[in-house]
Length: 222
Image 1 (cartoon, one colour):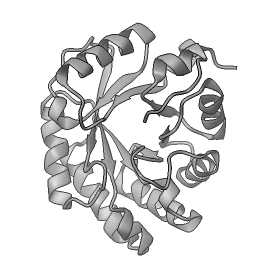
Image 2 (cartoon, rainbow, N blue to C red; image 1 turned 90 degrees about the horizontal axis):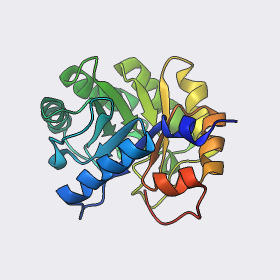
Image 3 (cartoon, one colour; image 1 turned 45 degrees about the vertical axis):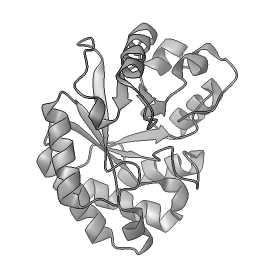
Image 4 (cartoon, one colour; image 1 turned 120 degrees about the horizontal axis):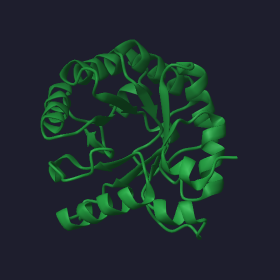
């Protein structure tokens, strides 16, 4: 059974609310350092930030709709890395996935990958709750072909919902053991975190990290 400290090391401590201020992000970083999370995940306009060296900085790209031109996503990702981001969480064009245009999804991911090569970590947000099983498999396969490092369930902003154990299991089965799987969107309790990890997740996107790690009652959030 993982301890709260073990879980913390897998958390991207997240603040993506549109009304977030620089002071909010500074508080997020202090809290992440206190809790021992793996990273903070913020919007690109919040960069650069002052953070401890051991705390990774993740930033979203094409967020939250994914309906940006690939060239814009690539430029946004590159600018974020130049401003200090270690990881980029990009959103696919979910409509392309619904139309089974997996070659286009792959090209979109590949454009961002080319703009932010290793060692930058590239996570691909697929909005799993808006996709059927075949579409989840198709976009995960596209992410593998395009050279992504992770597939990620959700932005946390889609009305269809966030992470599910079923989606995480299917994503893990599709990408195999070598890619990461990030469960995000609605992961608010220790029980939910443990279920996602047991299903194959290797990273968690959480806004209410303190409450989750303390075993407190869940609240609204990412």
